Amino acid sequence: MEAGNLLLRRPIVIRIINPKQPPPPPPSLPPRLPSSFPRSFRVSSNLQRGYRGPKPRREWVADWVSRNDDAVRSLPIYVGAVSLLAVLVNRGVSGIAPVADASSSQSRADLLTLGLAVTNILAGLVWLSIRPKTIVAVSPQGVECLRLNSHLPDFVISELIWIWESLSAATCCRSLVIVYDSKLILQTGVAASSSANDREAVPIDASTLMQGALYRSVLNSGSQSYLANLSLYPGKSELPFLPPNMQAVILQPLGDKGIAIIGGDTIRGFTTSDQAWISLLGDKLDATLTKCANNLVVAVQDRD
Image 1: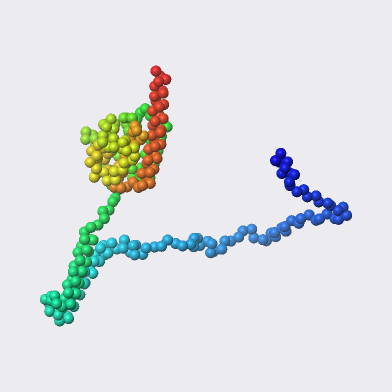
Image 2: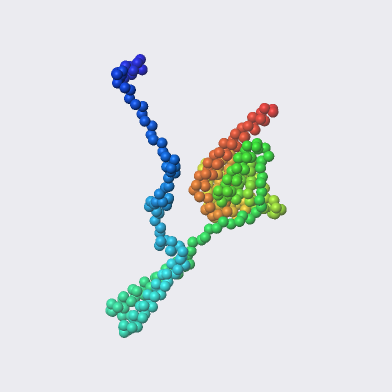
């Protein structure tokens, strides 16, 4: 009905053609271009110069200070020494008595200048004695190892290897340990060497690890724990399987059944983006291991 109304409302135009009037000529086609007409165009050289918008502002002072760090730190010492020498020369040349006289305005000005000069010298000495510590990556002391749970299906093993290769390539990760449901799932990377045999890695007791304070704190919080400087934490004794000079560790919970321990070779080497990415990897790995555990339980029930 609505379609019929629309057709009725649309105006109908009827064109009456006079038979005596000749029909209009057909529309003419555009003229063909001559063969000599260029088929390609050159872009103006102004457009080929690239981006001509506003450029980022360069901090010349900051760049100069970073390139001349030692000279800048020593600058207050030079300024204080020159000021102190100028006061002494002025005192000797001006003919004023060398003994300070409190009633003389010149003596009071000289004492104030001497105080400022000594302050500059002391500030320069402090700047030279306090320097930021350079953070560099260390080489973990241990042995390379790769331990996988033999009961894992192929798709889980492939995902574990992909996670390890991704972390070791994109972050400062050098060790990875995954424990799930009181079982060791994966240990790869650099591990601490056993005292009995230097070529073998320290074995991991999964049940003891999951009963420790570190695991219980991560499990209770349900969030990632980042130990940016591992040497400052007393809980380092609960991770004897990591190399002794491991610099940083991330404890990533895997649901409420497991944990992933990621060791780095640099203090504060894991960025905020790395931590967020590792959290997503932990969620994905938790879903995969949960699915794998359910499949194993179903398989065991079918066999029974």
